[in-house]
Length: 352
Ligand SMILES: [Zn+2]
Ligand SMILES: [Zn+2]
Image 1 (cartoon, rainbow, N blue to C red):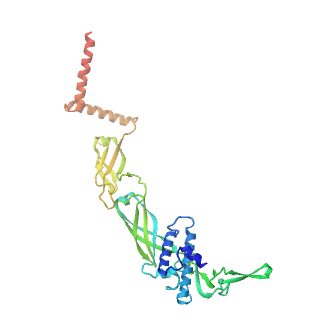
Image 2 (cartoon, protein in one colour):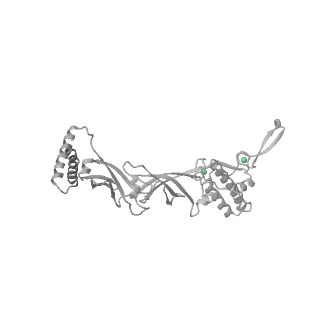
Image 3 (cartoon, rainbow, N blue to C red):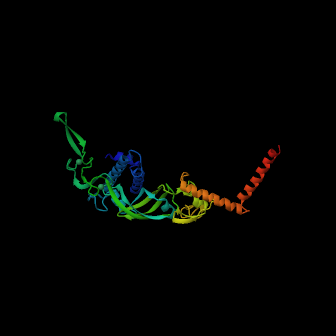
C-alpha cells in the first residue's frame, strides 16, 4: 500500500502521533463497522481503513525498534488490534438484537437467557485475513518489486510485488480467523427484563467480558399479539369477553382471564364494563400497575330452540306474576298506569 494513500485513507497528517493515530483509527472503525453501518460500502471502507492503519503501524514500528515481526498470534506483536486487546478495556462490542416477549412477560417482568454469536474484526490480522511473517516474500525475494518481461522480452519492467504489496515481507493466511478477517465470539447471558417495557423499547444490557471481547447487548423489545388481551396505545389493558346472557341477567359469578391467571368475577345485569384496578399494564417501567377493563358481551342462544322457548315463556309468565304481586315494582306500576289511561281513552267512543 502507498504510504501517502494510507494517511489519506485515515484522514491524518503523516506527522500525527501514535496515540492520536490509534484514536482516529478506532473512531473510524466504530463508524464504519458493517455491524453498525448499513451503507453498502461499509465493509469495503472498513477493510481499507484497517489496511491503511496496519501499513502505517508497520512502517512506524520498523523505524522505532528495527526488530522483525514475530508472528501474528503473540500478544505484543506489532499487530495493532492485538496491542489494543491487551489494554484493560480490550475490544468492546455492542450487539443489537431483538427479544420477543409475551404480553404477560411485559406486564410482570421476566428473565430471559439470550445466546448467540457476534462477528467482529479479527484481532490477530486486523480484518485483512493475512499475517506478516519475519521472512522475505518468496515472490520478490524481499525486494518488494518483480520484473516483468515487456515487448517480447527485449525490455524488463519493474512492478510492485502483488504478493507482499511491495514491502517485501512474506504473508500467510491468518490462523486465528482462517483468513476470513472475522472472528466470532459466542455469548450467553441471563437478562432481567423489567415490568412495563413496551413494544419497540430498547434496553441496554451492560457489557461483560467474553474472552478478549467485551460484549454489551442492546435489546429491542417485541411484544407478541395476545389471544385475549389488548394493550391500547395509552397503556390501558382491555379484554372483550362474551358471557352467557342468562348468567349475566342473573348476576352469576364467571371466570375471567387476568395477566396473573384466572379469577372469579360477579356479573351485574346493570353493567357491561368492569374495571379491575391495579391489574392492568404498569404505568411506567417498574411502576405500579394500571387498571384492567373487561367488557362483557351477553350472548343468548338462537331463538328457534323450542325447548328454550318453553323455558323462556315460563320465566316471563312467572316474573309477570311476581311483578303484579309487588306494588313497588316499576314495571307493575307502569302496567297499572297504562291500563287506566287506555280505559279512559276508550270512554268517549262509548258515549257517542
Ligand atoms: Zn485473522
Ligand atoms: Zn513480494
